[in-house]
Image (cartoon, rainbow, N blue to C red):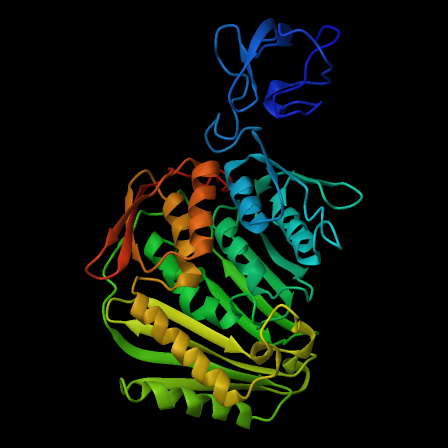
Length: 446
């Protein structure tokens, strides 16, 4: 209960912070009366640095997003739409309520995009008790996570604004800590130029989870139909097993030497010669470096080819220590032409150019070194932070901007800080952290 006329929370919210149990605040003197945890009244005299109230005894009534471990009603307020997907995933894992303001407030089309709203609906499908509040303009979002329950035979339409790869990474992370295993069918675009393709997830991402103790026999990603932009029409089926307790800490610093190159050249609703032309261009680069190069052709016709024509290639370099480095390139459709991009990237490219660019990107990833490519650095850091309370040590190449932002958000949500040590001899970076000890408390106990 509150007396008449009290000041706002330090963050300026009338309703205050969730843990503070503030019903309504008005302009007021500094001294307030609040209801304590035991039901009694507590005199509140000051504000903490995070904007939540401190009692007279100095004990916080909720000291920000890390006041309690892995859950509890903490509220984190951010502005803008940057890294919204990663923030939603980490908020779900940590149990923190997320409030996002000014989502593209100054854009010509303000508010959430279609793929972001679709991600929120997907999070509601695999959890129980979650709630999402969005204002009329879509510029303000309040997400309160629930309990991850997984599910079987789920179906989700990802839309056509982003590919299925945008939704696969959150499902892989959250599906490991559900009450039951997760089986879901995703419909939409399987390959595009914005997000990792389903081929890269199947050949590179899934084998990486084995290092953290995830049983790979129950981990599966099956491509039922392919869908190219702009209309999509593809479908994949994902199976993610439940982790009984927690992930195992990993020491992964030996990158080894490249021993073979594998890949898939796909084509939908175009001539099968498109795939063969991409393969010939790619083999012209790699056959000069090593003999073990094999790239499959994957041509789809009829109802399995989706609704739009398209073609592309996905390559994987496997090292002697089991590391997988991937690269991919796809034809740019007309609908993705943008005035901000170069003319060469806006025009539809020849299959020979696509194969050549994919090969050069893979050679650059190999040159940078590390146990994973730049696309998988963020996922690797999240898995290391979610392991048991043990030391994980990994080696990566040059840190990508997405990986740097991931490290910051991991520290903010999970309280895990990485020790970064450059290795001048190899030009790589060694990162070490102690896992947060995250356990699967949602699992079904029989």
